Length: 308
Image (cartoon, rainbow, N blue to C red; front, side):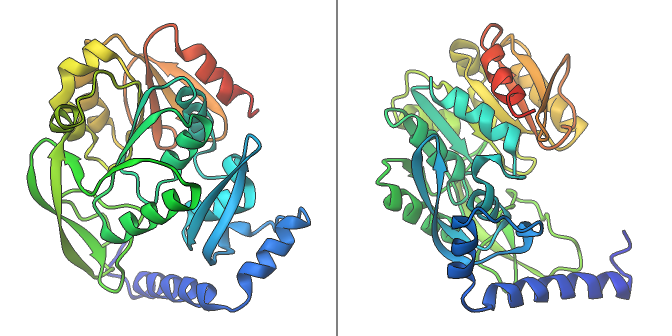
């Protein structure tokens, strides 16, 4: 795409303006709650954003969240865990969380994966990591709404302890996708740098006195190898189930170099419900891969197959 084109610049500006106008429209929340109560899901529900608290049902339990007018909450509001957002990954996560004792949610944002894990397994110890102040605020609100006890690190995980920067749109204090020391936005969008704190997973294991990790979700926009490389020995010893975003072939190769001796089976996840075992890690069909010890993958893959 030619980002220098005036038509492209106009497109991005118009898209931002349209979303802001839609969010500002009055009476949307009660209207949408009414439609949902009647069992009506508009075909264009992905565009029907609002702000404020809502709930969705998960295996007969009510999970409460604050809607931030982003896709994740919108899908959970209208469709629950069967919506368009990471449907297959969520069902695998649910199946894995039910039998986990210690769960890590790395790149937690407002906490959807943490809330779901705690809902299906209240006894699990959930530790989450999120560096953005506004996302941290929403995360804490969501935990309070559900009375969930989740340990939250207000830091990004990396391969060093110290400071880093993430890039936010100039007019925003919140985003669903940021990366450590990397700008993700297209050149046309003006951004500002936000200084964040970083730590390592090895340090966290020491601080939390962890004797095992059973399940990990990592979604840090390309920084996944740096997160894992400090705990290579722990991975070999504990062999946790890992749900991880892999956006490029190069990134897949780097992760495989870290986990190659663990003995994982690799499963490429298509969010339409397909899960395919592959020999090597590469760019995902959608976003995520499942890394799983042999003998444990069958029930997780079955959870995904049930969606078809």
